[in-house]
Length: 120
Image (cartoon, rainbow, N blue to C red; front, side, top):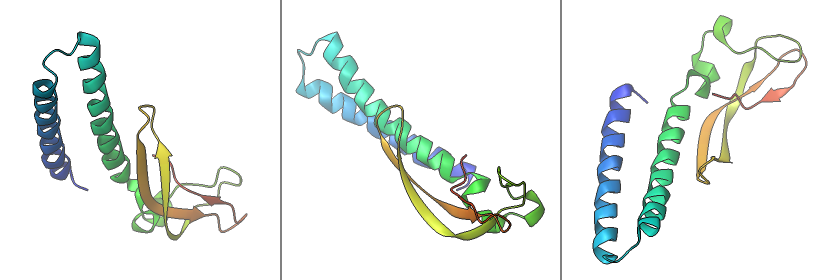
């Protein structure tokens, strides 16, 4: 994902959040400040999860195959350069209780055969 993709996707998502909050407020004209805050926080956590997934997926570590061998991560056990072993998906839960799915190269150490789902 390129920087301009972030801007376009996030701008649209931000506008959608505003539109949804306006609609919510019109549907709840007597809502208390606490209720408004909870509704806004819920929608902002959703947007945060989408942004976090996009940012993490754009990491250079998402595709070990695309990295020059000399720049690939090293095995924390033995220090050998990791090699790709196909694409894997992992679903994680964020601090905001949002589930995000990352697709990236699963890496394996050619020396000790340990496998890793690269962070970052």
